[in-house]
Amino acid sequence: MLIKAVSLFLVFIAVLAIFGKLRVPGVGRIASRKCDRCGRYRIGKGPCDCGRS
Image (cartoon, rainbow, N blue to C red; front, top):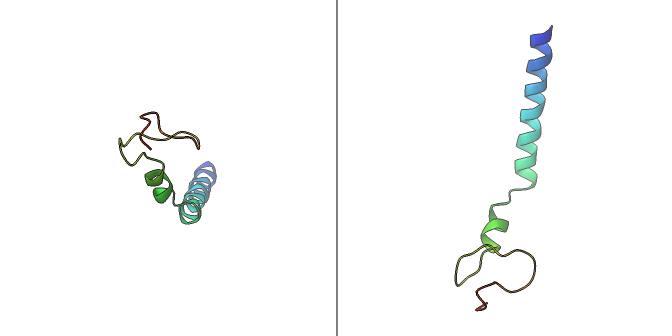
C-alpha cells in the first residue's frame, strides 16, 4: 500500500511539472534580463550597473 501511495505521489508531481513547464516556459524571460552591452543580469527595472545601457 505504501508503494502505491508513493508511486501515485510521484506521478502527480510529474504531471504538475509538465503543466508548469507548458504554462511558464521562462527561457525568453531570462535572455531578455541581461544587459545588451556587458552581458550581466539586470536586477529590477533600472539601468545596468555598467552605466552604458
